[in-house]
Image (cartoon, rainbow, N blue to C red; front, side, top):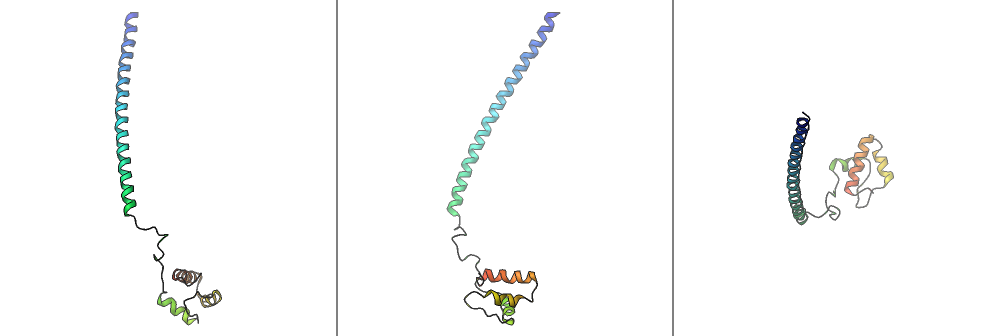
Amino acid sequence: MDLEMNADPGIALDETIDRLTAAATHLEETLQRLEEKIASAEQKLTALEARAAATAPAPAATRTDMGARKTLPTAMTTLLAKQGVTLEAASLEAGALDAALSSLSLEQRIAVKSQLLRAGLLS
């Protein structure tokens, strides 16, 4: 009876070792496939980055004409003209602008000043 009890754990141990060996082999194969996929993805990424660098437009920092508005909207010019502020090539005076915008709400003053900044008339 002692021999039967000792034999069963030995068989179970051998089966467990076999299953663990098979699992380790499977994990190694899976790891190898994943490493190959990662290497392939890195190659594709490098190729895409090279292609993107070759076809990329000039950075925004070197393009000075992008988004620079040279004129004000007609409504803005009319509003300023009614308040006695004339637009010249030079920047507006801060005192004249504040006096002209004093009748507007805070949001409207901010909108007017942002448009003047975009047009390059306010510094």
